[in-house]
Amino acid sequence: MTGILPQSPSVADLLIADTGDFVGRRVASLMLTLGGLQGDRHEGETRKSCARTPWHSRGTRIANTRQLSLVSVEDCQDIAEALGVETVDPALLGPNLVLTGIAALSLMPPATRLQFPSGATIFITEQNVPCRHPGARIAAAYGNPRLATAFARAATGRRGLLALVEREGAVHSGDFVRTIDMRMARPHLPRVTA
Figure 1 (cartoon, rainbow, N blue to C red):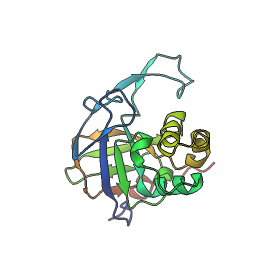
Figure 2: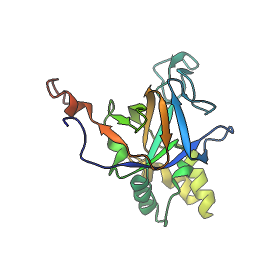
Figure 3: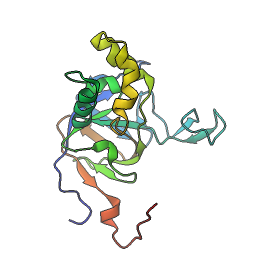
Figure 4: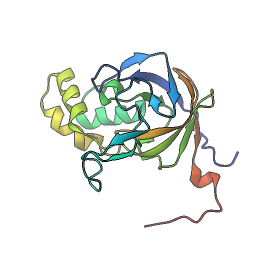
């Protein structure tokens, strides 16, 4: 079918950050709603602007394009290699969904949709820029303070993606993921190049 990437990605892990910490607890399934994940720290159709949105006065109510965070097993392996460590536990990056089978997930273009067997669909909004919190967790896990500052460079272009819920539904660990690249799904639209 046009617009469907020829990959077989799946859900490797699911997490929800409902305890106040950005590192979530593992769960077997998640129920996606138009407000995100009920009880998750990024739940809501709107949020307050912050340092990541400097074009708005801090605290201004804006659309929540950060309802979900995604990382891939493959990107975490690349981060580990760049840091010179054996592995990086994806949970330390604070995602809700850990996917496998998508090379360079972090480079997936905005407006790509990921659809799950229940029909639940998420809309990719942007790349997740590395921040200091995961670096500190990785440094603590390895007892190596140098990793805290090395993380931002190692994770640039590999930290995963942010998304919002386009269609509600359940996501289960092990689910296959249908990837819909809107650039291929709508070939009649002109491509804009920089």
